[in-house]
Image (cartoon, rainbow, N blue to C red):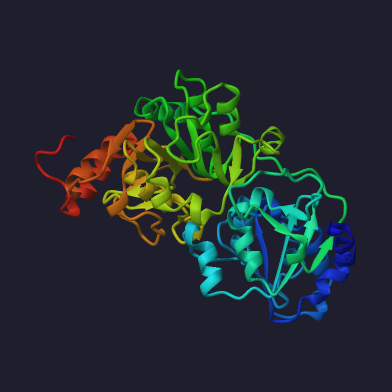
Length: 445
């Protein structure tokens, strides 16, 4: 029998010893969400004055990133995110983070074909008796990045859930260069926020489209999670899970007896996820749960995979929609808010599914810091990043209704979108549509 623990001990280093492999000019990768290597980042930050131009990549990190916070000049460490968390958004606002455009299913192929990783470091579960570390909540992208790295450093986090896998959910000690240990705070929690009346109205418009046996994808953000929680209160049954991100709504669906996965066309009996973050209850639910498997996003988010699932229901949030049906889900003007993520993946895949539907949700308005109300349905974008093109817009939902834009001419889209805009803005939107030559005299007012 191989003595994996001897190999483990031989590769064990302190965080300060392990990060000595990082050189000026290197590309360093932190993977995603709770895979963020807190101890290694702190140790790397201590080397600030002896390193220059170390580029770091990550996404959906909760922070704080000591390498970034301790180097406001960005001469030593230069951070880049594939998908901004609330914390990374603040870094962007401060000029301390740059955004990397991507589609999530393509992230690992980007690394495989085009990118260099000199050092990859991430948090994992403790090693098991077979010599494997579980990649846990970061499984969706982690293995592909680790495989590309010249040097792999694993940080053992005693709080990480062990999520069983379809494939590429673990890495063996033989594939690792160094291991570090140390105490960690409890995993950050991201519970579902209480729903607003607008949230509940949006959920009410979507529920009639969902049938028993449907498979659900709930995107990142509070609104999809709220909708999932409302589905848990409904009479629906035998629902499935196939999602890039697993949040607390799925745990609520399971506890309500709605989530069985038994009618899925593929991965029957298994709820499939790429990443997971939420509350302590969620982490405990996914830990060593045979009914939940983690897989790489090249599989989870592939439209051909999604399309094989009958009655696939995709629910994602957005920031704004213009009268042409273009969807902006990641920026406010040119200010980066989040990222493309898997929205376009699931829009495409759900449209390929027999009985499938893709919903883009938003409240009809937002209020600025001065309390002034603004419409989320706008005449046309002025610098906002288009996440999903008008050619792939499907259902758009606000608290005032749900409209299906597929196959609709631009004048039809304008009428339908204005019908679900806040009433205070409809006349102005009609005037804009007329000016843009996408309003017919026969359109309803």
